[in-house]
Length: 200
Image (tube, rainbow, N blue to C red; front, side, top):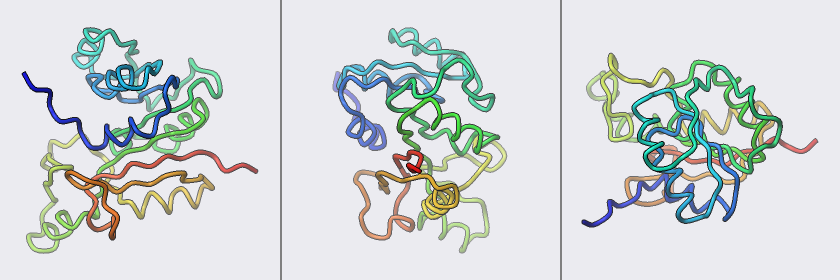
């Protein structure tokens, strides 16, 4: 049986992370990304996930995953425990964005953030023409059943980082199959960024 083509955001994140890195994935889901990092990068990985069914899938894959709500912070890890903290497709679902990002930056040397880009042309067109909350491949749920409680754009995120003096080391706008180089805030479906604190 042929293996499924890996998600583009997972491909990009795997390219970013250096071999042998210590990685914490916040909202790791079923552990698909963590498994890839173990297999391809020999990474030492841990995850935090709130959904028990997803945790069982992680355990079946031999992954170390803790049951927890990242909105409560990361009190069990000291500063700079991890080389990378991953917050992929979770940021738009958390209640306490400031706390989650600050805690991720505290326990990790670098933080990889991934989120759907609400300014994608498809979402803009849907809202403009039909006056309805967009349903797109990266935002697939109806407004009444979506797990997302925040809708942000690539430009929103870069402004957020500038306002809080966070340094963006890398920034990728992702299309369905490739990295978007032209007008990523318009054409990117998802965004992946690597951030860290600015050195004083």
